[in-house]
Length: 125
Image (cartoon, rainbow, N blue to C red):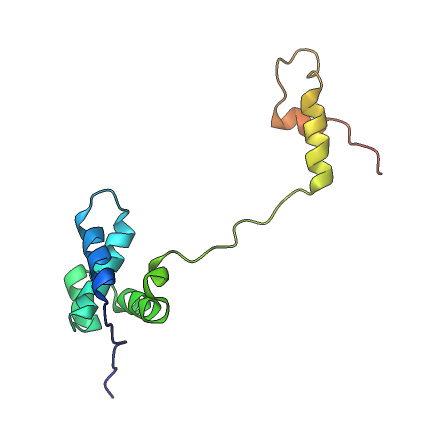
C-alpha cells in the first residue's frame, strides 16, 4: 500500500514569506528548515525525497507538512509547552520576600539559599 503525503498548495503570499525565511540570516534555523520543507512540498516533492535532500527523518517532514496543511502559516510556529510546575506556593514566596526585606544574620552580608531555608518559618494564618 502506498502512502499519499499531505498535499500542499501555496498561496503567492505564503510562498513569498517562506522564500524570505530561507534567504534571511536573521531567522532561527528551525523556521528556515520548516520553510524549505513546505516549499519543496508545494513543488510536488514527496516526503521521502524532501527528507533525503534536507537530511532529516521522514517523520519530521510529515509533521510540518501536516501542520501546515491544517493551520497554514500558524502551523509552523512552535506549540506552547506547559513548563515546569511550581515548587512553592504563595505562602513560601511571601516568607522569602519578607526575609529578604530584613537584615541577614550577623556575619553575613547577604541572604543566600541556605540561610533562607534555615530561617524560622512564619506562623500559620
